Amino acid sequence: MPSIKFQSGDTVMGRWPGSSLFYEVKVLSYDAKNQLYTVIYKDGTELELREADMKNPTGFKPSRRSRSRSPSRRRSRSRSPARTTRRSSSRTVSGTFIAETHKLKEVLEKPAEVEPEKKVVESRYNLRRRKDDGDAKPAEHTEEVEQKPAVATAPITTELEFGGRLGVFCMTLLLPATVLGLMVVCSQEDASLMSSPPLPALDSLWDLQVFGMVVLWLLFQALLYMLPVGKVVEGMPLKNGGRLKYRMNTLYAFVLTVAALGAAVHHKIDLSYIHSHFLQLAVSSLLCSVLLSVYLYVRSRWATQDLLAPGGNSGSVIYDFFMGSELNPRIKGFDLKYFCELRPGLIGWLVINAAMALAEMQLHHLDYPSPAMILVNCFHLLYVLDAFWHEEGVLSYMDITHDGFGFMLAFGDLMWVPFTFSLQAYYLVHHPNHLSLPWIIGIVTLNVIGFSIFRKANSQKNAFRRNPSDPTLSHLKTIPTATGKSLLVSGLWGLVRHPNYLGDLIMALAWSLPCGFTHILPYFYVIYLSILLVHREARDEAQCRRKYGSAWDDYCREVRYRIIPRVY
Ligand code: NDP
Image 1 (cartoon, protein in one colour):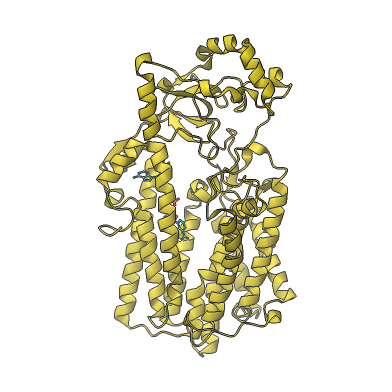
Image 2 (image 1 turned 135 degrees about the vertical axis):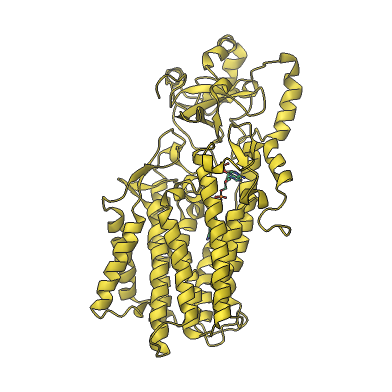
């Protein structure tokens, strides 16, 4: 970073947006184009700051030295269980984001206004540490900050999501049972959710050969992941200032998988095996996700502390097992979370769909799959290929940047996605649905509308975040925020606050309609996605309000609806 005042890794004092309060921050990176520094506060909040809002910490030192000689202060240190004899050596560590080099200080630009200003700011911005109330308090209240050892420690997760320990315990049991239950009902002639189909015999759920196939599938995808093709890009900045590198080759992996399956079919391997062993495949995938989660939990005990996920470090075994403690677990360069996020599950979903089309043809003696099956296959294919085409965008997803890798994601990637997202195709094998031409045209139009909104909204936002002065977006209105970033408030982003979610939901409906209206089961996906996106919107809203404060309120006043215009 030539000719700039602060360097990556520097610990400086950064102004909290909209206030005169300065807190200790660590510089993560500098964006020369926008002339903004990305910094991280002690509570884990990342913001972009202008140089004018950052100060050298030396200007904050004098009062500390005088206090360090105070007997009362010595007493307070000696009472602290966290105090170590390494205090003096930890002082010499420069550029680390821990401990004690400079206490958090409140800078009084206008001394007379400080107290009222502080109150106003605290009501507008959440100045408390998100997971741990300790570190983000202004300096005079944080004697303990100086007493931490010079070893990076991850904040303890105190705000538990999903109903806490009991909630995640129930989810760990209920989610796999839900998938298996849906699959069993779907295979019945009466696919009503009110029906009580006979429970499958235990030995019909397990087959060692099927388990071997699932393991082979994972190994094959892992091999494709390691192929040295596709560009390598950097992920989002990590808490320690570093960035991980990722190879973008999912599309190649998909093409090679299709070629391998084509060759297999050519050699008389019957893909409808997937249909006839569907339950066993799901159980084997579940077992793989459980084994993977246990491995992830065990290895997280030895993980570097400052690379733990903020939400998976509660100390509770079941909670951390579910949420995942480690943010980006890697074996050498092999990123386990990123691998699972796109490949075995999403490609697996498409392979299952194709196998269902073959099974339908065999069962009903068809030369071609039915129009309904073709629509479902094409819609899903478009969605997944779009994700692969925009693979780089995945690096900024909450899953990658925020959530730890534990049972929630491992199960989601390896079992939930491939076996619930393909339910419509599975349903059509047993419940054919005739579609008239007007219906086909109507459903295709709906999917095109949904996809256009989804893609345009995501592309606009991504382009705007990459380059706010992109000339193709100059017609859009924006609201500035104290962080230096702006918010789009016209076009799709002026229609609702999450136009991309709206597009996603419209598509989800279009995927279900080919299955007709006899049962609600094929609509499971659209119901599930609605719940997920409403919950996700609330999480994102809370984060944005913390980040942008009053600017976010202005945005909400300007764009009143969240996902569906005039409804929600
Ligand atoms: P978004 O891509 O909408 O990202 C939200 C972020 O966008 C905010 O935190 C904020 O971050 C930024 N932002 C919000 N409003 C504005 C604005 N007006 N102008 C500029 N930036 C804004 O959400 P997700 O990451 O949740 O979803 C990504 C995609 O994945 C979506 O299309 C969603 O439908 C899809 N999805 C699909 C799922 C499925 O199961 N099929 C599950 C989950 C998601 P900042 O300001 O920091 O940039």
